[in-house]
Length: 162
Image (cartoon, rainbow, N blue to C red):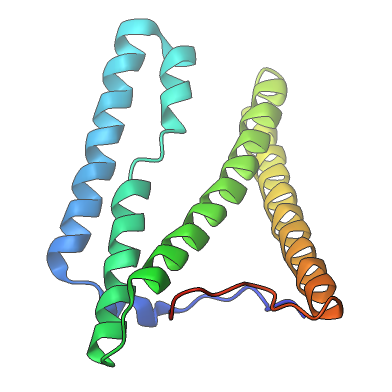
């Protein structure tokens, strides 16, 4: 069974103020870097760098750190759990990248006809591809778990405690 997509703002309380400053600074630095590339080599080349996952590295390390801290507070080892949480975040980044590629492709095809139409069409393409990618991933994971259960094996072998 797949879980519904939902928004949870409770994770905002887990972060510290300086972690948000780091994310903001890295995102701003990536934007400035992209602007410099665009002014030097043109918008087509600079646009490629907009796909740069500016805050992904900071996000992945913060997620891992939060999970490890949460487990340590419960007197459990949390390194593996932190790694798995960061890996899940990276899987989401890949799915998001597929959606952004669809956005860019549709926008590029439509922008010369109408800018507003290009934004609407590209946004719909992003939404469709992102949701479809999420659905395919959830079905693939579900079928792997079912096959593993039928063979009498755990879905995810665990050599270390989470």
